[in-house]
Length: 381
Image (cartoon, rainbow, N blue to C red; front, side, top):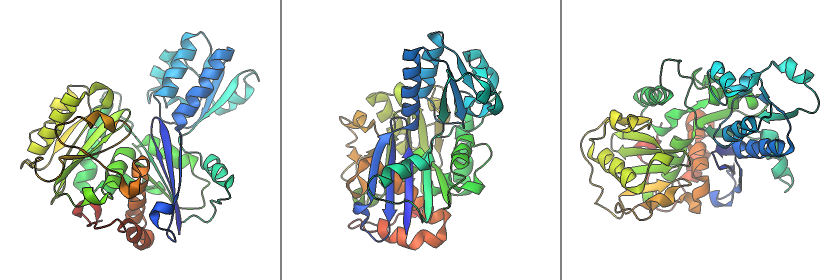
């Protein structure tokens, strides 16, 4: 049984091909530029050449690509976009028009002059990944499943903050199913409000294998639990310090007991430590994070946990985890199966076992292979 997992972030897309016949450490891995970084480079080349661009495809993650398009417009060059592609910049198409982007239909894209450079937008490109593997003699036919993680704010109504909308969604999911894999879906079960996840499913519609999609931060936290040192620490807090977002879960005997999410760029070590301590104390409040331009906080169990007990206080993963290196909380830097970069892929793999029970047994056998590892209550469906 083989499963392709792809964790798509701001800087990189991290790819792991699971094969149940191999020890999990021997699975093939690729760490490649993220789709938004690839689009950024294409736009920058067009800016340097003075070329108009036409964006088509589906909604995808922004950040670097968004900033490159803004620079292109400021340089005085035209940007056309189909409505689906334009939602990569804002769900409100009127706001997209105000940026200076000219909306065109799919048919109109075809009638633009040949000098206008076409750039396709999408987070997940299976054919490109398959071609990369094929260069090394690895065929991606006959996959049992494909799993993809992206960050999705959700499609907030015009009068609702997207930060508040996302946190209401997180709360709803955890109250429905108190486990990290609650943020994973089969392609035909994705909520309509999760438009970026829907766009991934659209990009993968020609796959011959079942597709599972998941939010990136819960995937990373779930994956971190397969580090045996993390797995054997209860209760604990696991923080994913991402390029754009930092999300921390408090995990205890009652499952997920609380969490917060903030923008990494607005955090320094002192502020992050305070948030982690208050989450452990059970005293962190939503307004404390939201009013600081973060997404918010949820605390379900107010009974404090002692971060001073045990060998470490907080487990940390994510591309900006070095922020926590000098922390007084004695952070432990998780590396499941010896590799921090594909932590999210291991979380995706675990989520596939929950979403596709017929595949669960070999997946769980592989993930349990970490030495001296226990299975924690928040991992089990």
